[in-house]
Image 1 (tube, rainbow, N blue to C red):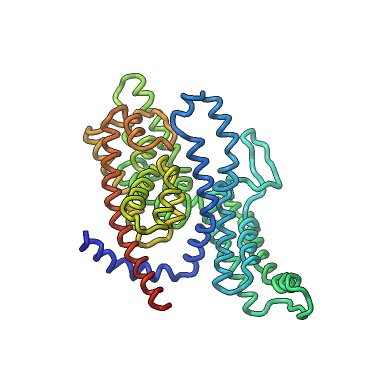
Image 2 (cartoon, one colour):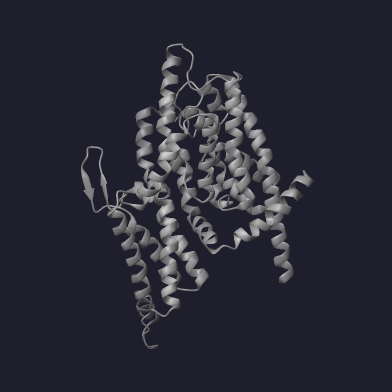
Length: 432
């Protein structure tokens, strides 16, 4: 173990140091740290609203009413995460450049809103105008928010540093003076965002979000459901998470219809008592490949039991415990953070490789039955879900084995991260 951690420290820490000094990556990481209270709040209510077997206790109708009642706790926090991220990036970059942080944050936010479509089409085909669709400002809009906030803040600070400003006499109140001082830089940044909006509206893509989606849709659709394809999809999901983007939403929006079609085939065969035709289904990817519990439980186990002396990790583990049991791991992604952390990049990407490979082989060789197509909420805890979706105790054993392997892997890399933090703390104390 010591040799392994020493090897990782030797080759990972220099890269991590370079990575941590990039102002854009720092700004993105800062923005997600700013969003952390909102994502924890959202995660707790998501877990509560999706507690497994709740419907068997209170009835499906009452549970559905409760979920509708608490839905704003998600839709107006995590559901508008792109707005929070755009604001946070503008704030962080403005702080870096030593320009007005409030105006920088608002420039980042409004520039993203400027390129966001203000119309939507209802299920009945009716076009609704002058609205801001939640579907565009949640996880789907994250990439656009990051790009536009960085671009707008850069334009804003460039204009200020080149004196494209209106300076008022010293007798004018500071708030008024700051407003006039920032007028031209803000105007230039917002006009640039408006120009981008007009350019995209003149194309077949219509919006920046549509361009990103269509660039992803075709290659993802062509992947299929083989073992290599499923591994690639898993890597892509966690790769997006590394950059703070909701990988499940981005990739899943394309792949879920394909996986669900195969789930329906398996369910039909299972009900008819026939051989199950598909290995890769929605339940396979949900509970054996991409389940949040494969990250949250190993990381929480490590934070709470193996790193008790690092109080901030222990406190985070306690806060993230309830959502983590039900596979909600945003508090760990943004709070530890796993996002934009080069030391944790390897276990993050390796997790779906391990889960996919082992699960696929176990089912292909007959050690574990194929998933039956029986639908479960994604918040169903691991081990329980494995037994139900495969109709076999061997499904639960497979999930338990994966959790043990992943806990060991995450512990090793968290040990390296702990060593890095300890070294930084020692250097900081020596300079005081």
